[in-house]
Image 1: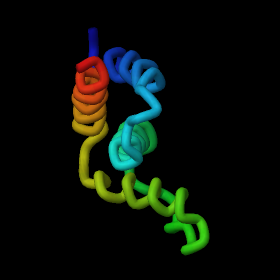
Image 2 (image 1 turned 180 degrees about the vertical axis):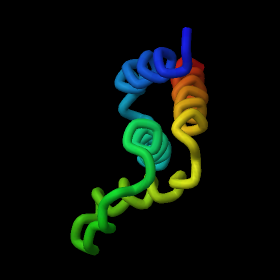
Image 3 (image 1 turned 180 degrees about the horizontal axis):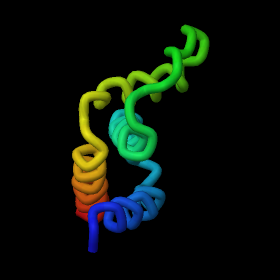
Length: 88
């Protein structure tokens, strides 16, 4: 299985993470997903009153230097980790 296929499989698995998954972990996944699928941040930072969108933008910006492959690999690793923690 190639990296792209494994990434897509884990993107589906990420939707099965429990509600108890922390916002911090959700933001990490969001940033890695956007970096892997879109690339570097291509929008302006949302304003102060858009706290949720601003947090998502910041999470994406934090991984901006990663290559598409690196972001995919990190995303897969993080989803596996969170699924293992949920099963424990």
